[in-house]
Length: 256
Image 1 (cartoon, rainbow, N blue to C red):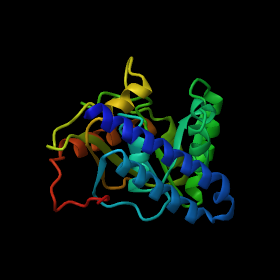
Image 2 (cartoon, one colour; image 1 turned 60 degrees about the vertical axis):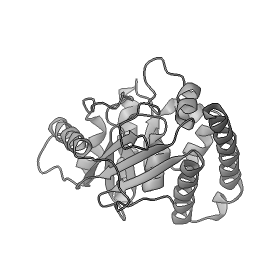
Image 3 (cartoon, rainbow, N blue to C red; image 1 turned 180 degrees about the horizontal axis):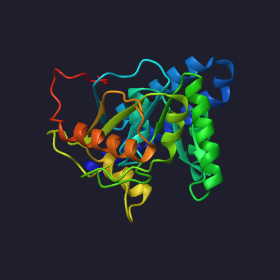
Image 4 (tube, rainbow, N blue to C red; image 1 turned 60 degrees about the horizontal axis):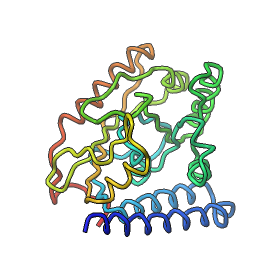
């Protein structure tokens, strides 16, 4: 039954993605930015529901920007999970922009792109992030720079924090975790090492998954340089993850 379930969810998910592309091409040019953000958040929540992912949100969701969210990175699923919890503008590697279909949708959701090998492009990205923060937007980065198995949080790269320092914007630590239906950590959505994207998706769709998003308390730089701040933010994300317990019926569940 698991392969059949995964296939059915995959086909429904593809249909939902194509529907999202139609919305981007036909409706987005007619919508105000706030309405586009709302559409992206609803679309992401619907995708999770189709794929059997239950979203649990803990902590206080930021109502408005400017704020820079920093989160640990486990899976390709992190982006729709965070979008479903709170729309944000992601900073992503430039390769994503060139991916068929996904690149178009990522751009429509407001993604900022960075050529990681180029120091000059990193500076351009920091300027773009700073401008977005000045305009009161919510921006999100994965400062580990890559995905991990999720057992711990990798050291944070500090460069992109310069945007928050330059604009005196708060930074919000966010912890991500994937659990099975019994509340135990599950590696199914992980996307590391030799994993293929399709293989990771197939594993994920074969079982129900609980995605936990834990928002921490916002921090100001308070005189810290970006390296010291990055280390403190990493510890904040680790603490949020370590304090998580299996979700209960009394916790906020964003999907029914």
